[in-house]
Image (cartoon, rainbow, N blue to C red; front, side):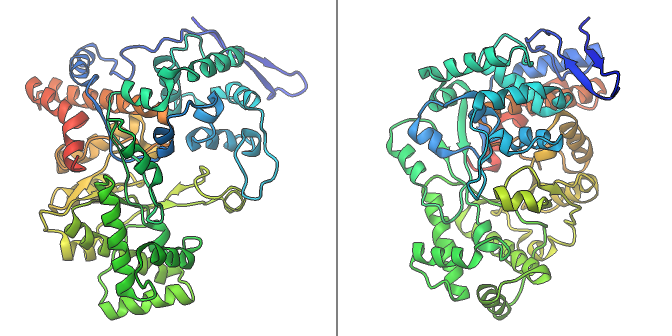
Length: 491
């Protein structure tokens, strides 16, 4: 049995030196399966049905430049740690500064540049990730993707760093080669309306057959509290040739950019609003609110009302142009203001908030809720809303579907809670399969694999409780892993 040796300092009994044991680095092929032998057997059979199906990644934040330039990734630290706020937020929570992890500051102040040293810091503190999905993703990438046989611990950090970097220099580990090896059928990135999509153009012109598409994320030009909002609107006008000093010109500019994104392969939009509030104001009220946003700025309830109106406007536009609408509400973005001022957005300081969907979505649903051609996918960071609000809403309105567990709940227990709290009311077919929503490219197969294992585990429970036949479970497993996501995102 492996043991963990803990040496306590006599003068300070809480000063613990951790000696990581040498462990078997191979991942158990039945990880995440239930302990009960009968359940495990059914799960195994279902998983064999879906484990090798192509991956559909319809929503995420990988960098399209990786696939446009197809250059080798530089080193393990820049690939694994620096772009992954799941990893560095945990280290930060234990007092390790972002500067020491090589995260660039807005003011250009000095940061750690020695990537080997940063990698060692991660290894020294890898015990922090016990029981987290981040550990599952990291170890899957390390052992299954990169073929590293040693366990990741402080003693092996240097050797593993060199082995990863040597592999990353090979042709078979370039972004496009990995894309093919991951069996990715389609991968969506996410861009601002102000992005001219030069990397997507480059991919399209390259002759490569990998399908990398964009998604329309209008937050910088629909959220009056987004930094630089007025300047962003001016740029939107310059890009489109529309008069964005008027409400009508502003809407026309947004429609034009949506059409451009659609021409570049987009099938969806994405909206990361603080809440799910929607509004249905009269045109004159919209004009007045918009002009105030441009001239003086909006905050508080007025800013919330403007964002709410823009969700309704985006739904109207989706009904016209066919783009699937995703709403990702309920995150208090950049909660750590010191970090935001030093490093900017997406530094792991976004915190879930309580979210009301029943009342907040009613204005939008009153206007468009029964439209069969409109598709709106709802996500949540408030799990208390699953059975009380989201499942009943999606189980009724034709336009609504439930997105998979997201962000903090993209985890084994989070996925099980989702299925157990939504299936009885919304069923499986008012959900949309899985999407990985990640910046960490090498974690994509790990995340999909986890989702497939957990869905098969849940289906096995239904089979063993005689609530579902084995034939239905096999069909549903394939739907959850592959077919539902293609249908929901119109891929």
